Amino acid sequence: TMLALRSSHTFAILALMAIILQGAAYCGAVAPEELPYKMWKGQTVLMVSAHPDDIEACAGGLIGLLTAQGTKVVYVIATNGDKGCGAAFCANWTSEHLAYQRQMEAWNAAAVFGIPQSQVVLLDFEDGMLTSYPEQQVRQLIVQQIRKWKPYVVMTWYPFPQFSLQPRVWGDLGYHPDHQCAGQRALDATSIDAGTPLIFPGAGPAWHPTEFYMWDFTPSMSHYVDIDTAITKKVASFEQHKTQFPNTTVVNEMIRFYGQQIARLVPGFNGLYAEGFQ
Image 1 (tube, rainbow, N blue to C red):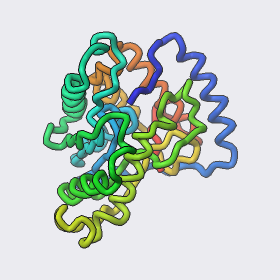
Image 2: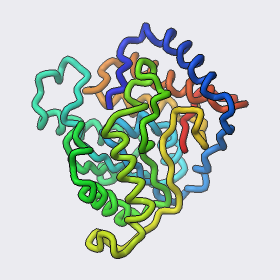
Image 3: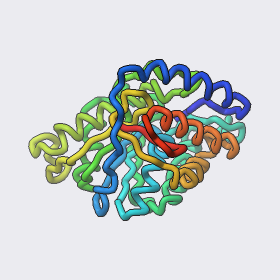
């Protein structure tokens, strides 16, 4: 995913803008609860994303906490990222070369958390075109992974645009057609498809996950997690996506910036960094 914040000198201005916008949006919102991730020890959490770098950007802190407590984390990445290049060194690459490199980056990012390559699944749809594929095809492949891994929890993108997330501050976290499509297909696959034996009967024995969450960066989030102890690993994992953000200083500032903005949405939160969910 292209988060679009690439120069470090803009962060002070963006931080002030974000505080003003989020402060106004927070009026009347219900205070979020702490995500019950500690209850998932020994379970499996499956995360469905659109692009190879989405999961670390949205939930890298949580992944660090989960893997540290013995929770198995599985990535299901819908597209191969074959169109997204944010660095000069890959500007002239073919889509095939870029897809290969982004798979390597996804593996390297997961390895920071001790997640093996076998738990990083790329469905290999074309980047930027997820909405153009038959809905049934995408849902079936996600169902196959849910039935294979039997997760207790599924997490994914929010399935509708969140236009309150100003692109100048939040990049494409508020809207990207691949993001919302991945979220909708994952929601359908989790809520109905995977647990119904007669839907995609060739995709394995039915399995119905117990919990479902979406990544959220707005005051509407229902849950949060304190990621202060995991922020260093989150940054290190996202640094592996060098085709997107080759400048490690910018990555460090960007990831911490987003964590700070979400933390400010949690009343009484005493930490520095948080991730939000719904």
